[in-house]
Image (cartoon, rainbow, N blue to C red; front, side, top):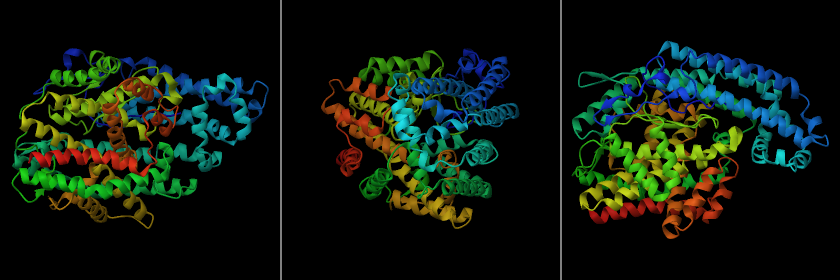
Length: 620
């Protein structure tokens, strides 16, 4: 049973953001921005339905354990074993869906405000209840995996259980790393006082940090946004403010990082994982050699991609090198002004509609039904996410929209996730979730559709150049930067096995991988050594980051197939998304003639980025 908590967090809202009226939608330079309506889950943190559902979940879990614990092997061996086990899985799935609703609501409310004491207590209490209830279900997967392969295979010949074949086969991949029941229970129960507590500390700390820029105390999101400001002095001031506050808090972040790395090392060692990232690969259902091939291809391409692009960018600013705070600076020839929310909505939906009316119709519901929370609010953490919640409900998108071109691409990205999650929901709570290897495909594809649409409508040479450069920067941030992040994580987790790392040592590792990936055209100034501290993926989802590069390169290859043979492509693409977690990524890519195990596959995806840089060099 998974709590399906939000993967990004923060924000400052009212005590009960779920009941906020439409009139309360925030206003900014980007226009009137929507706030989500969480009432589709629950009306508020004090809603009586929450207490009712928590009690129902507790009771259902206890009854489930009473009915099935210690009985699976015998039950499956019966003549009607397939039907009997299918009913057990169906009941398990229903509990998972209810837990997903409770956990999602708590996570989303907490994402709206990580510092409000009442919300923090609510989030903590619900998380503890979910963990306590799920202890009664822990036996189910463990016992299932101890059943003989031949017996399970025979039972799955029954249509009722055959429906759950993808989930059962996926579950049994964890079998070699499964521990004795009481150890599994201990690991599970202590998670609330272990890594989950450290995750929460990170969230609350990062949300409460303030950065002094030009006499103003800013939260992290608006401070990071200043790194994309047109004024060089503001970019520099923001970078220096980030560096100072990070430095003041380095011991806390180093302790969180060391503790979580040690916690993961203990778990991996007990389970028998050989490599620091093997548990992530297993979770992603991707082979280690495939990820290694991706990482090797990207690192070999650094000179052709990021090194070459940043040298170009420095030239556009009439410099030999750019300070690290100018890496994402808007280009001198880029259009100025803010993109209002209605315009951003129109851009994305038009691009989606040009590809598939079904895809656009699903995306439009996020706007009409208030499934998006867009404003930047005091205390709201950086980033964006699309939370799938649970199949009996619908996804929610959180962003921090400030009217930048990148914000439009973020909207396209998160709506891609949302469409994917809506389409996959029909598979049910157990089989809707998609492994990370394909989880970023729909999001990056949504970005590509929006970019291509805008590019086709742009006739002005300088605006076209700016659009191309912006896309290259996004691709570098998605591919090069994320693989550098992965390299950083590997180094930190590997070295942590030999003892704690000081903040200074973690900073040295960070500078090493950043220098390698950015190249000589980026001048890394003092203070940048602590910029690892605010990356939430390092804390919440160790080694998640390579999924972005996987998705971007995969989408580049997919889009090439689309451009060369668009007939029937949209239908095949939506069918791939609708499959959710029912098929291995290799099986889903077959209809497109793609094979991620082919070493040339990654080079093909990277050549798309290189080709765009070729075009920019020709323009220059």
